[in-house]
Amino acid sequence: MATEGYRANVDLIKQRIAIAAHKAGRVPEEITLVAVSKSVDIGVVKNMHQLGIEDFGENRAQELKIKMEQMPQARWHMIGRLQTNKVKDIAAQIHLIHSLDRWRLAEAINFQGRRKNIRIDTLVQVNVAGEETKTGLQINEVKDFLQEISSLENIQVLGLMTIAPIVDDPEETRPVFKELYKLQRTLLRYRWKNVDLRYLSMGMSQDFEIAIEEGANVVRIGSALFG
Ligand SMILES: *Cc1c(COP(=O)(O)O)cnc(C)c1O
Image 1 (cartoon, rainbow, N blue to C red):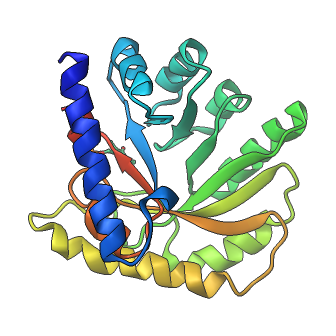
Image 2 (image 1 turned 135 degrees about the vertical axis):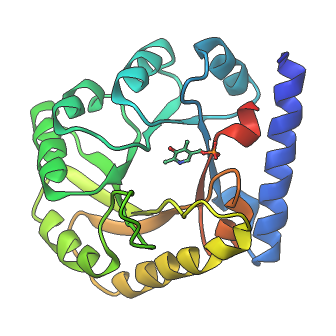
């Protein structure tokens, strides 16, 4: 696709984000669009960047590492399951890890953060619908997990992330997003160190408008942008 084709996609997605935000009484500026560029050529990613997209998401550490090296000027997000032995490959450059889903991974991220004397920003992934095929903490595990994380000095939790089940009618995802928003509200009452739950990363191509209506301020969009 030529740049013009991508421009039309970007314009349309931004417009849809704005409409959903206004519908929910919010402003589009508070919603971050993460363009999910997995299996997309770096040339196309650079095109997108020139069109004003600043944030890109990848779900494999290896591909992420290569693209971060090729395009250090963008903000890179890790959105897929992360193996503990891959953390060192992405630690120095990663903007936000959305897929913190277990204690061993938290320790590995903290370890790399300490080595590099940085704090690594993360979101805790929650398996709201309790699907067996998905990773992520169960709703009732998140509070204790955050409390334990607060003892790790080189990791910071900036919010929660979820992937809604694949359904025929996107409306069916609404309760999942509502549930994560409710969890965020509940957990905001606690004042843990190294925890500041300002982001809700939820919504993909099929359901991002519903996610925004239910409180998302980070959406991860792949196919609707890259075609
Ligand atoms: C692939 C992927 C997306 C984007 O999915 P689309 O349906 O292409 O928008 C979002 N989040 C995660 C975790 C993904 O793996």
